[in-house]
Every structure is written in C-alpha cells, then in structure tokens.
Length: 362
Image 1 (cartoon, rainbow, N blue to C red):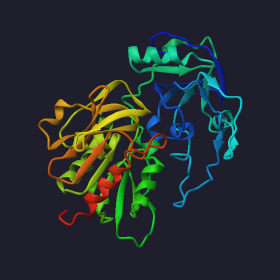
Image 2 (tube, one colour):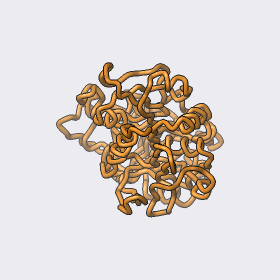
Image 3 (cartoon, one colour):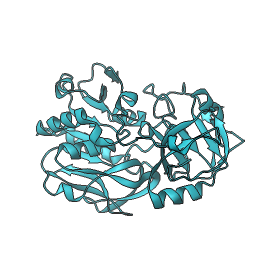
Image 4 (cartoon, rainbow, N blue to C red):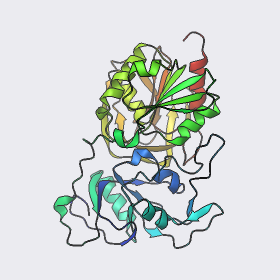
C-alpha cells in the first residue's frame, strides 16, 4: 500500500509481518546480498527492478576475506525494512549457497512481497517521487497507517557502532579514522588494502575523539537518512576542514562535508540507486560507470560561496557527484567507489585519498 492510495497485491515471503518504510527502487541486476545489507537502506522498502531475485541463494556470513570481513555482505544484517520483487526465484543454485533468500529474510524477520508488477511501481515512483508505503498481511489494513516519517528520523543510533573498533595491524602508525554513519564493510576492506589500519568511530564522535588516535587521514562513510540530522558529525567535519586533515567523504559523507563547508543539500525526486550510473570526472574528463545508493544530494549553486568545487557530475541529470576542496586535502564522492555490488571503475578514488595522506606538506 502506498501513501497515494495505490494498492499492489502479491504473495508474501520472508517473515510474515506488517512493515512501513519509504519505497525506493534499485536498477542493479546482481548483488542482492550486498544490496540488502547496505546500511544506507535503513528505513526503506526496496523494490528490485530486475525481474528475478534469489536465483543464487544466500552464502554464509562465516565466509570471511583476508581481513576477517564477510565476503558477500556489507554489514552484519539485512538493513532494508522489506523488499518487493516481480519474481522470487524458486531455484537457488550456487556453490556458496547455504540458504534461500526466503529463508534468510525469515531468519532476520524481514517481510517481502513477490508477484508484483515492479515496472508499474517503478514508473509510479519515477513520476510521483519516493513515497511512504507499507507491506501488509491483512487486506483490511487502513491506509491511514501508511505514512512513515523517513526524512525526520535519525537512523544513526541504529546503523553506527557505539564503541570504537580497530581493524588491521595494531603496530601500524598509518591509521585512518573512519567515522561510521552507516559504513559498508567494503569501505573498510579497501582502506586495509591500501596498507592502512582503520579505527572505526561512532557517528557522533568529536574532533577530540578523532585526534586522540593521531590519524593520518579521516573517512566519513555512507549512511541513511537526511544529512541535516547528523548535526554532531557535521560539527566534527567542520573542525576537520579547519584543521586541514586529509579526508575522504563517501555518499552521506559527501553531503556532510558539503554542509560543514557551508553548502546546502536537498532531497532528490527518486534518488540514484543502481550499478550503472555515468559520472564525469571533471579533472580527467573521463566518464566512469558508478554504483550508487542515495536519496539526497548537494545543491550545485550552494557551492559557489564555499571553498569546495565540483569534482564529479552526473551525466544523466547534472547533479553533483563529488566535490574537492580548493586548497586543502579534502575530497568526497556521492557514489560508492568501493561498489559492492557494481563495477570497480572508481577504486582510484581510494588511491587519490592515499596520495593526499602521504603528501609531506600536509
């Protein structure tokens, strides 16, 4: 049920419960385990535009990489409030498969609905914009209960850690502080691959907390919700800018750095969620295919009176996809350079960050 009164009937799967959330769609063709565990989807009911979902099942969370991080998941649990698919595959076949998508969702108490015309639903969202909705088990459920206050909700306590966590070699003096506003494991993985150790801190950590680890750089992660809600993170980011600490912002982190620098953000009509979004690097003039998941963006005009300038722009709608400070070692991207799922065309963003933190003049 949608807040505009529309009703889509289908067959339930996963855990049998009613669930409200903001209805969004993702155009990706693969990687549903990574997608569903992305904390940026907290509070949202996700519609997959790819027609058949679940055909390769779900691998084990115990399958770890060389850093001790799960290979096929971006957090420790499903983050979406529910999912909508056209066809839930009745065959799950892959050498890593340990359970079906239906079983995984049941185990984590997440509802889903299949046999829905996801093309019609997606066209409705593209026309109207994102809206609240509800998965319901009972046809007599009232539409009055559909409204979900996504924009005003602070998801940070639900997606961030409460205590610092360390990754890598404890004797490594090349430490990166990761401010966790809903980070994906692949961000940590790519920082470790660069040879850094990572100190993951709660979203509301102060500049004193950050500096106590003597980091050579800072990363502000992705995450859900309106960036304006993250006032503590914005405050810390403004002091990071003032102290000229080499910094990389990713997705929500891009918006937080922009706000800290004096720019504004706004909500997109239906967001960018997929694995084939074309973005132009204004430095190299090369267009890259990016993986994205965001519902807010930086207002282009608001950057004019700041010390930030546009680094990347979206080919489709000319929205801001990345910013860079004019004279400080601070960069940020709106897309996901770590992808997972999606193409890794933009891994070089992490290499750019490494260049910034290793320069002797900073």
